[in-house]
Image (spheres, rainbow, N blue to C red):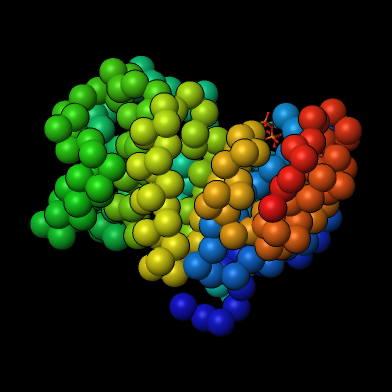
Length: 248
Ligand SMILES: Nc1ncnc2c1ncn2[C@@H]1O[C@H](COP(=O)(O)OP(=O)(O)OP(=O)(O)O)[C@@H](O)[C@H]1O
């Protein structure tokens, strides 16, 4: 990979029809970090992720991943996305195996015929998240925590450089959360970059090296010890948050 920032946003502005969801977002994150994305409901966290994924087209500004523009990032499948559970049609007739295999699509020909190496990588990814025994299950038959782990396995199968996780710990028990955090820390060791949006502020200081505070724009970003302060949190939550006594 290049020496450019893993994630580089310059003045990114996104609107849905006439509604401005994210305004002038500028951000650089180094590779090999875990970064918490924090803000109120509707602050623009998912929109930030969608802009990085190329799911929404900014009306202004640019996004680069490891110095590369959107088309190249998508061609090389550099970014993986773990969506919020509500964004998925769980009745769709897909097995866990099929979803995780989707992480390999960018490496297949147009017929999408998996090779032995694709099947092997899918197996390893399912084993990593402890879902190998459930590989034949229809996706709607999984529990909340199993659904999150399935998408994490898809991201691992994709071998992406950047992982975006939208509320991965919502509705997940403590044991599953710990398993997921351990797996994400292992990804960081490989030099991969992980962005996690979360409402659980107490966990941020335990595993996030960096924090991004969002309130319709990027209010602050950088090292957790410098950015995750009561003053910044008060700005991000417009005073509606009960501030913990110590944040570092
Ligand atoms: N597809 C859409 N069409 C119109 N407006 C949208 C759309 N998606 C999001 N918005 C609006 O854009 C703003 C930012 O939404 P976004 O989902 O990015 O916030 P969020 O910080 O992820 O919120 P939450 O924590 O509730 O998931 C909100 O005002 C939301 O209502």
